[in-house]
Image 1 (cartoon, rainbow, N blue to C red):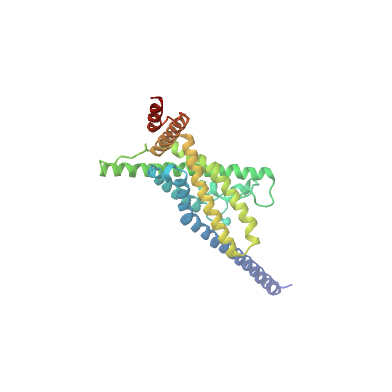
Image 2 (spheres, rainbow, N blue to C red):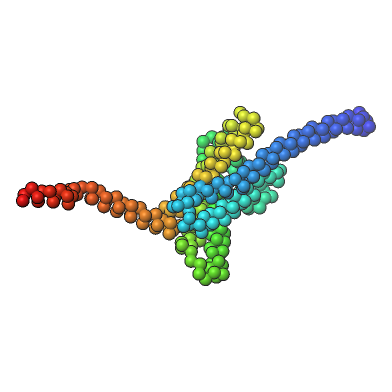
Length: 296
C-alpha cells in the first residue's frame, strides 16, 4: 500500500476518533454543568437559608431565646457564616482531570480523588459499590476534615466577635456585656467537636438521602424536599452546638443564671404555698364571738 493509500485510510479513522472524543467531552461537560447547577442551588440553600436556620436553632436552645446571650448568638452567626462559605468553596466541584499529584496540599485534603485513591467513597459514605471498611474510612476522614475547618473557623470567628465587642466597649464606656467573652481556643475546640461529630454525621445522612430520593421524584419535588431537609438540618445544628457549648462550659451566661434564679424562686413559692395549705383552718372572729356569748 502506497503512502497516499495509507493517508486515505488513516484520515477517516482519525476523523472518527476525533468525533468520539468530542462526543465524550461534550457529555462530560454536560454532566459537569448539571452538577454545577445542582451544586449552586445547594449553595444558595446552605448560605441564605442555612445560616438563618442555624441561628434560629441556636437562639431557641438558649434561655429566653438568647435575649441575655446576644453576644454568643452573634459569635455563632459569624462562625457559621465562615464555616458555610469555607465548606462550600472547598467542596465545590472541580475538574478531576487536574489529578491529585498536581494539586496543592489543601486541595488534596478536600479532593474526592484522595479518598478514591485509598479505595474509599469520594463524596459521602453511602455511595454505592464500596465495602463497609471503605465507608468507615470516608466517615473518619470527613470527620477529621470537618473538625479542622471547624477549629479554624472557630478561631477566626471568635476572635472577630470578641474584637467587635471590645471595640463597642471602647466606643461606649457605659456598655457592659452581660456575659464573659468565650475563650478563643476552647470555643474553637467546641466548634471542631461539633463539626467532626454532629455536622459530619448529618452531612453523611443528608447526602445518602439525596442519593436515594433524587432519582425517584421530579426535580421540583426534590428541590422542595432538599430545601426542607437542609433547613431542618441547620436548625438541629444550631441546637447541637449550644448543647455542646453548655456541656463544655464554654458559654456560661447571665441567661442561665437568671433562669436558675427564676426557677428557684418559683420552687420556693410553690413550697410556701404547700405549707400554707397544710396548716389547719382557724375559726373566724364571728364564730368565736358566738361561742363566747353561748358560754355566758
